[in-house]
Image 1 (cartoon, each protein chain N blue to C red):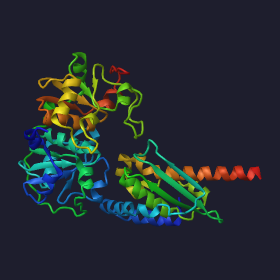
Image 2 (image 1 turned 60 degrees about the horizontal axis):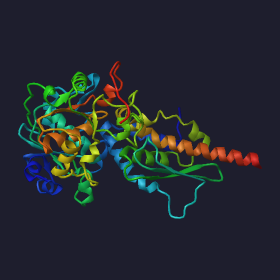
Image 3 (image 1 turned 135 degrees about the vertical axis):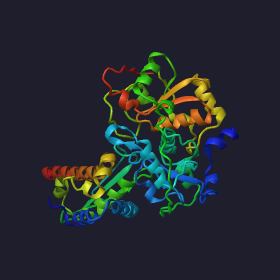
Length: 284
Length: 153
């Protein structure tokens, strides 16, 4: 992998292991399994729940800048703290939380390559002890940067109608409309199967090795540019079912391949597939 | 509604706890899930091992019904099974020990939120109800087979 890029965005399990007690770094676990952190986590890691901590459920939106400042404050995160994210499921939710931090302009972030599974596979220490946190006073961000890192339904519709790059990162069966959820999960939450017209299918999994680590920069470039035809200057929107798998691909494009204009459509297929009068395509 | 006594004891314990205590106990119950795996050479009246869409990995339900008609469950869980499913495995294997088949079939699922808490049920409803559904399914198959044998005789 290109070492410069890796140093900027990705850190290894060894890198994290050497910095577990560093007060300038906050290690953050985010998982699909909501109780997993409590069964054991990296020493000094805090837990951010993608749903309970980052979502404003009554309006299906993200938390306000004030709530974000409170969340950071109680977890001992300052404006300049380096936040290192990791989690289960090849870092889906870790990438999602990292992406959500971008909404509030907290860009001093990294992802631990391979996530929780790799840390455990290497026999590294887990603890159930919650870290002692000294709360910080995190300045309330002026606004949420929705326009820069987030795409909404209308943005995605205009991309579709304008034949701009749209990447569907779900499984091939979901893209074709044969199923409405990823394999191994209940087929629930959306009325129609298929994809946004004009979207190209590049499942998130094509970006990772069997152990959940990211493929090399050359391999990633071949996947997204050689095979999919993206260019670094493109204005790209990525989506999945609810925005977590596409956060993973967003991270690849933004941080590993250096794309400037890439946004995550967090409404994703649960919004598009259910929306009255939204056009869909089925099949390849 | 009264529940089987052992299950009622677990419900009472969780209902007395704040949310943080519920979580701690769910973790403790999930830690205990392996104790409910079948022992080497153990025999059962019904074995049902499968992977469903409702769960992220394979779950095996092993049912033994003794001569007095009391049910005893053992359960195997694949490595990808979520923590809540592991916790509910212990809750249900322990709570339904020695309960008659029909009582298990009639058991309402409204005790689940009392144990897990409404918030986690809302987030993970499939996971929290899955093990109970599988246990009931095993009991139903057992009773159907028993009835079929009685008709044959």
